[in-house]
Image (cartoon, rainbow, N blue to C red; front, side):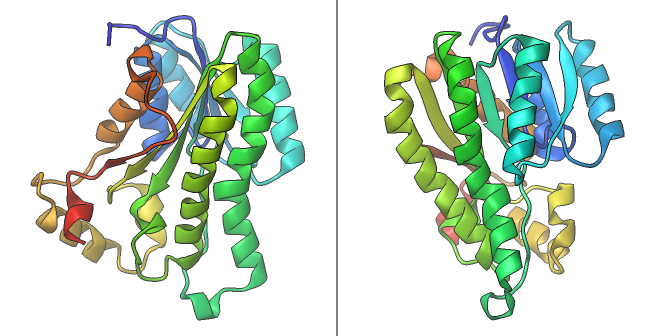
Length: 254
């Protein structure tokens, strides 16, 4: 890719103010994109991320929305159209979920997890398409995890939601191709981020992942952000409906 292959593009990164989302927001900005940094609760973190991004010479604005709420998503995309004039790139990164064994899950746990992690991608794709069509096409990249096809402790609801996200990615890739919208997903290996703080065996997950990784280290948010940026570039035009695994080979040994 060139130095700034995304110059003039507008990107929305959901959950874009911290952890992996922040790394992706910054990487897209480094590539030249203006960035709408979505957050749900922590506006201070979003403002801080936007301030860092503006130092790269591009536009950045914090945009609040709970991606599980259809009405809030409509307002979010209206706000992006007003503040940025359109949308070229959608990064579906925001995630949540209940970490419990299957036999302990309640309906509300299931619905919340599926709505945040999978249904939101469908709704956002529907809302993003008109904005992308006005700009000649676009890119949608969603963030998945190895639990979509591997059994991880207490990961039932999240794993199923990520499997649904990957399936939806394939369907969207075909349906949106005539509109020049390219759709893919990235599945990240274990990373040392705040997302793991809800796991009671967090330290064991990280130590095992590092010890057993053929690459000799943990995956970093920078590793994943680099692949996301590539999937948003013209160089990835012929990659469609794929879930690109970024785990240093960890899943080969699970």
